[in-house]
Length: 140
Image 1: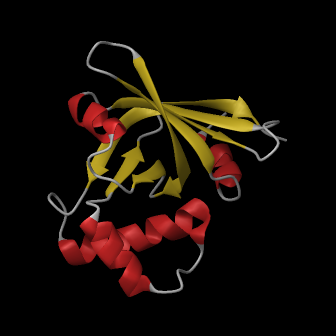
Image 2: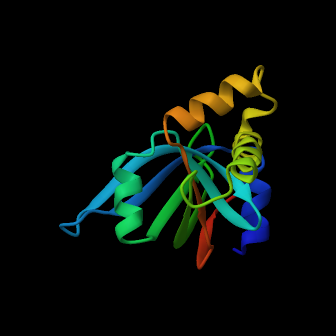
């Protein structure tokens, strides 16, 4: 499977699990809402101090699994994570990227973008883009 096929699946399936590596080498799994953005797998950690963020800052390798509602179809993307936040991205640009991420992860249009922007800033939200080094799965 290539990432183009995965993107079609990710257009309508946003439930996912990200696997990162803990300091001791063990896997750490987190439930995420995911999608695609700029030809990469995307998810957002609403809380910037989440364990998955700490793990990815130390070791950017990760695996993201997106599943259908009935668990009968899935896509897996393995790759290197790029973390974007208010500390390493222009604030105005990042605000727009977070809004794009909300849409890409199935959220559509938010009822109050100003409220959303404030919540993302307060919680130090981190946008994570995963370069698709290896893609596989089963879709119909």
